[in-house]
Every structure is written in structure tokens, then in C-alpha cells.
Amino acid sequence: MSLIGTLARMEAVEAGRAQPLATVRHRHLSERPLVLVPLTTSGEAGAPLGALVGTDPEEPRLLVVPQPRDRDLRFAFLAELADEILPYVDSYAEVVEAAERSETDPETGKKVKVEVELCADAPQLVVPSRAGVEYVRLLGRSMRFRRTAEQDPETPFPAPPRVPLLGRWLTHFGERARVPGSSLLVAATDLLNRHWATGQSSLEDQHLGALLAWIAPDDGESGAEAALRAELGRDAQGQLVCPPAGPATDPAFDNRLLAPAIERYDRARQALGAAEDGGAAEDGLAELTRAEREIRRLVLSQLRPTWYAVWQALDLLRELPEGARVADRWTRDRWSFTGQRDRIAAGEPPQPRRDDAVTAASKLAAREQAQGQLEAQEALDDPLVMAGRRLAGEAFVAEVTEVTMAWTESKRPAPRPLLTVRTDDRPHLGEGVKAYRSLDGKPQSAEFVRHEPDGALVLRLLDKMGRSKDPAEGTVPEKGERIAWTLFEHDQRMGAKLPDPEETPWTHGGPPRTDALELPDAVTPEDIL
Image (tube, rainbow, N blue to C red; front, side, top):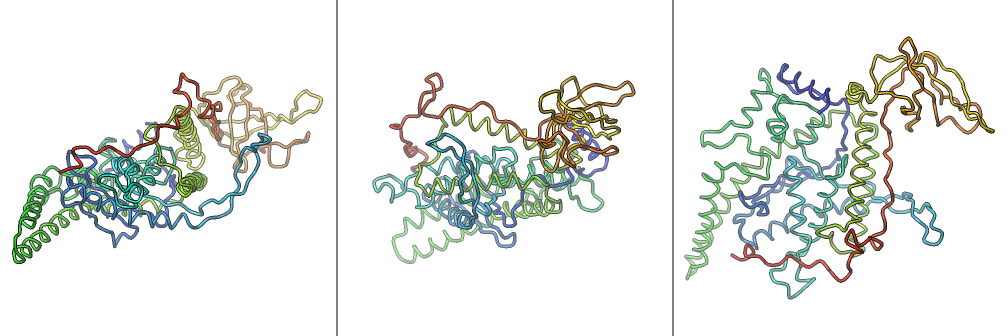
């Protein structure tokens, strides 16, 4: 945690209210996000109990599995979930715009510009907490290899038609959530924690109700008191007033309410199956309907508070202006979404269970580059974030006191002006260390030369001044100008180029096998009641 973050937490404890960590919003928020609040059965991470899903805060769709151990009911839940999510995803896949992309010419080996389609926008899934992000990845993992009756008429226990497709999309969203700065799949708690600091621990910050209690407490109540009530407050029946933000449930809810309701449902199903005449069958069906309605009511009581909390979090975030470089990161999300759309349309197989060595190394390198780029862009967009980097000695704000023109000693002299600057910051500067400033959105680099006896710093500009002997207008700072300099690069460099998968050395697994096709998941005892 940065010094600014630690200071903000201390101020939050003293003030009894969350303190801002940013002056702008560093993540993209869609105008029409899809909110998903999942709920799972205790002890069975992959057994869904229910979900609230939708794009309208006033009209969510409730999906419930009355008996989570029943494979058919789980498949019906996944089919209903696909009916909600896939049309939402498809609505973004149809609207495209022309864009240019660099590709390698197979004949010349040179980079050329080609015109391709880019989706004009992309879907955004919002879940309550980080555990919800992992649950989305788990759902995708469990669904994308399922076989349908159309794909394989002889497959045992075929999945509903669109379930494997939903699994592929959820897997893509889950993988994209691991890329720093991506906004295709986001957790409400992570969004709030990035922009506000509370007076509680990072673990407690994963409780959405407690987090919102610190950010927007009731009048006359401190954040600590409101958070304690959100975490531990119970009603007359002993149930939490603010249930967990999914996908886990409260043990008191499971033991006192849910388990008896599911037991009544099971007894009603057994009675209906054992009915021998029409009258008994009607009575059994009525009892089964009542039992299912009770389970739906109970699940809704656990999901509704979290549903409204997610939308409250989004409303709080929309009050912050969007950072200048957020759109660039969202464009990369749009490219990612477009690529997945094209892979599915081309009939490519689902994502493998395990990446080969080259793919895994490429993903890791891309995520490291994205992390460095995100940290740099947030500092450039937000003076409060930049203050943290200044305190760490990684940036400084200085006033130009003198500009001395100089040139390189070569046949074709290039401008290398010397800037004398004064700053109250304490940057970690040494001989030859480079500093960077933003010039019309692009980084201009300078080299530290020396410390003056009076404490001033001397920097030498190195680039972005044009090709002529005299610097282009506006490229050299003027006397009296205050400039923010960073000791970190604004654009992260890619590492060494990795070999093609077909050229992977044997020490790293060798080329990917073409004869080892991904097979559907084997039938396990949990699939059969």
C-alpha cells in the first residue's frame, strides 16, 4: 500500500467516513452494464442456488435451482442464464466500425496496415465481489466443454443448446478480468476500493455492504458503526439484515430456512412421483409449487439487498469524471471482445484447459505490461495518484528557472537543450537517470545531468523536438513553466519476442499436439442422483 493510501485509511478512521483515493474514475463504466448476483450452495462451489441478473435495476430476473444436487435443474438454470446473457452479448457483437490493425505480410515479413472490423462497444458484466469474478470463471470452466445433443447425439446427459457457448464467453470474461485495467468483467468491491479508502481491513473491504457503509453512511452515524451493523446486524428471525454479497450464503440462513425448505421440496417431489390417482397428483403438484415458491422467496431475500447495493456502487462511481486514458484501455477491451466474437464465428474450439508454454508466457508478459501501463496512466490522469508517486520519489513537479540551448556534436547537430528546474520533491535521481513528461499526450524524455549548488536540478531534453536544428515550437518548456516529471516510462515496452507455438523447444513442452483434442468432462458421481 502506498503512503497516500495509508494516510487515507488513517484519516478515514479519524473522520468516520471513507476518504477518496482518486479524483477521477479509473475504470470504464458501460451505459448499460449487465449485473449478475450469483448464489451457491454451501460446501459445493459449483452447485448454483440462484442468481439475479439484468440490465435494469428495477426489473431483475430471478433464477433459482430448487434442488442444487439435481443435474437437470442445474442445466435448466444454466439455460435460463444463457437466455439472459447471450442476447446481451450479441447486441454488442452486431454493431461494428472500421479500424486499422498492424499485421505481418506473409510474403515480405513486414508490418502492414489492414482495415478490419472493430465492435463499436463491448458488454460489461458487474458482480458484487471478487469471489463473484472467480465464480464466473468456474461457471465458464464447467460449461464450455459440455456437449449438446446436436453436437453428439450419443452423449450422456446432453447440455441445453446454448450452454457451451455461454461457457466460452464466461471463460473469456474471466480471463480478461485478470488483465490489469480491463473492464469487461468487474467486481463492485474492487471498483470502490480503487477509489475510496476505508478505516477497516482489506478483507473486510470485500463485504459490499460494509464498504458502502463507510462510503455513504447514514446521517449521524460513523462509517465504523454502519459497517458493523451491515456485517453483523440480524432481524427478529436471526437472519442477516445485509446478507453476504454472494456467492456464499450465511450458515444461519442455510440451517434455519433453506435446508427445511429444500427438504419440503424433496418430499413434495417424492409424493408427486408416488401419486397413483389424479386427485393425489393434483395435491402433490400444488404442494410442490408451494415448496418451490418458498425457495424462490428465500433466495430472493438473500439476493435483493446485494442487487441494490451493486447499483448503488455504480451510481457512486458515475459521479466521478472518467480519466483521460480510460477510453484507451476500453478500446483494448473492445479488441479483445471482437477477437473472441470472430473466433466463435469461425468455429474454433473452446479455450483449452491448460495453455501451452508459449501462450502462457505471452499472457503473463501481456499482463505485466498492462500492469505497468495502468500504474503510469493512473498517475498521469490523477494528481492524487501522482502525489503518491511523488512521495515515493518516483515523480516530481518542478518549475523551469532557466533554459540553455545546446546541440549534439555531430555532422548533423540535433537540439539538446538544458533545463534548470527547482522542486520541493525528493526524486531518486542519479547520473544518467531518465525523466519523462507528457507532451501532447506522448512522452518526452530528459536525462538528469547534475545537481546545482543551490539545490536546482539540470535536465537535458532528448527527443520529441523535430528533425531540424532548431526545436519545433512548443517542444521546449519555457521559463516559469511548472511540469510534472516521472521517473517511470509512460508506455511499457514489450519483452523479447516469443517463438511461435509450432517452434516451442522440447524443454518447454514442444509444439502443441494436434491429436490431443479436448474431450467433454467425464461423468462423475455428482451427476447422477
